[in-house]
Amino acid sequence: MININSCLQEIFGAAIQAAYPDLENPPLVVTPSQQPKFGDYQCNSAMGITQILLKTTEQKVSPREIAEKISKNIPANECIEKVEIAGPGFINVHLRKDFVSKQLSNLLVNGVQPPAVGKRKKVVVDFSSPNIAKEMHVGHLRSTIIGDSMCRLFEFAGYDVLRLNHLGDWGTQFGMLIAHLQDKFPDYLTVSPPIGDLQAFYKESKRRFDTEEEFKKRAYQCVVMLQSKNPDFIKAWNLICDVSRKEFQKIYNCLDIALTERGESYYQEMMKDVVQEFEDKGFVQVDDGRKIVFVPGCSVPLTIMKSDGGYTYDTSDLAALRHRLYEEKADIIIYVVDSGQSVHLQTVFAAGQMIGWYDPKVTRVAHAAFGVVLGEDKKKFKTRSGDTVRLIDLLEEGLKRAMDKLKDKERDKVLTEEELRAAQTSVAFGCIKYADLSHNRLNDYVFSFDKMLDDRGNTAAYLLYAFTRIRAIARLANIDEEMLQKAAREEVLILDHEKEWKLGKCILRFPEILQKILEDLLLHTLCDYLYELATTFTEFYDNCYCVEKDRQSGRIVKVNMWRLLLCEATAAVMAKGFDILGIKPVQRM
Image (cartoon, rainbow, N blue to C red; front, top):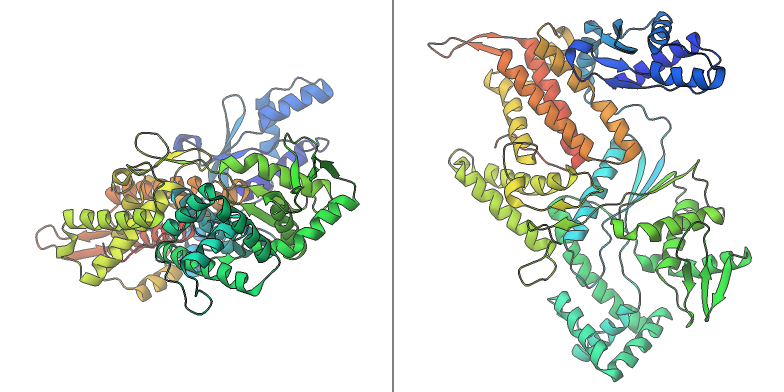
């Protein structure tokens, strides 16, 4: 699909170049117009050029004069109908109707295609990353949902994406877990231990570790045995990891999320080399037996080896970064991790640059940080007893409430059992995902089932209902898929009514929205756009008859095919938007 904003930037870039050939990197500002009377897009570069000319040549030229000169130099193109200069020097752009109509036909015939993003890049996204032997909680929910949606966007754009689950599956806590396993299930090597509740198992072992000196000593010995790859201890470790994996998988299945597991243990063998490399290049200082690395501009040094010879998170994160750069050959690496890890990750990235692993101008390494989930009391989201909310409980509560909502609306009377279940999971998990993604991820957000299940306003419930209604319009007019496809190839989309025109332009903004998110990784922009598209559609539908019926008999008198095609284009873009957000719409609701 054509990114209209990018097209206009190219056109105005050429016009500015022709008008002011001596200007280096002139500002190029093209945005959609906020009001229809000012055209469809605006080029606001003249004001910036005024400032540059004043600084570099001491010429005082009015922005309006500059805007006129730019307008005179606009090259021949297929998308601009006319330009007008307004106010102090805004260039208002009116698009050609036949250009917009042609783009919409193209979308209907070829489906929703990604914007052109240049060469196929390798992207590694590190997200979800729960800890073994601990249950997934609300904090993991944000990383999992945001990370999955980013992956879906990169995949749609045609990149080669590796979705990594950097599990906490190594470290000193495994000593106490293995020691406790040996005591509780002494025959664990031959009989698989029935650990039903791993959370309780973890708490018991932690209590013993904190109160029993003898147990603590044994736990440390177990760590040493595990790190030296003793087969019995590796088996115990695998057993514990497997119990956790099964629990995590239940959640990933609910949320329809695919991940490649590569926990901290994966990088163990690489850590020695990382420490060696930092030593060889003279970056290591010894402090009280620890090996530390000071990174210029960072407040806290990295500890790459403890005084007892053990490694730390710093070492494993450096090893993971190096592996992703050298072995995976990633062009883009994104860490979807909470804001609390900002200082740590910035230090790791800066160390990677300092040692020469990557150049930030060539390889993009970014921390997609996010805020915490708050309860309705605006405090950290906890259960009544003050425990962290288990993710599985939260999802089950969502399912229960979604079903209650559907029954309130008496949907159980018109849907089959199967359709009702499909609507239930679509609404429950769609609402939980959308509530998260529709907030700017940098901010904390308040978790409220009542708000997210509301079918008014910018919620998944509203959008899912809107989508099923749009999809039903053609069905109720007895127009099938084949007739729509034929019409898409033959009909011209008339955009004479102001609401048709507004909707057509809104549909075609989809590629520029995606382009922006690929750059700033802020997914709420897509949610805002889908909401705007749904409300723009409602305006169109209220003002423009798609299907005309006889008032008395209700018989269909006339089908305005070009308007049905606009309905179809809206639904196609919404469906792709839902897909990127990881939301599954249903045909009937």
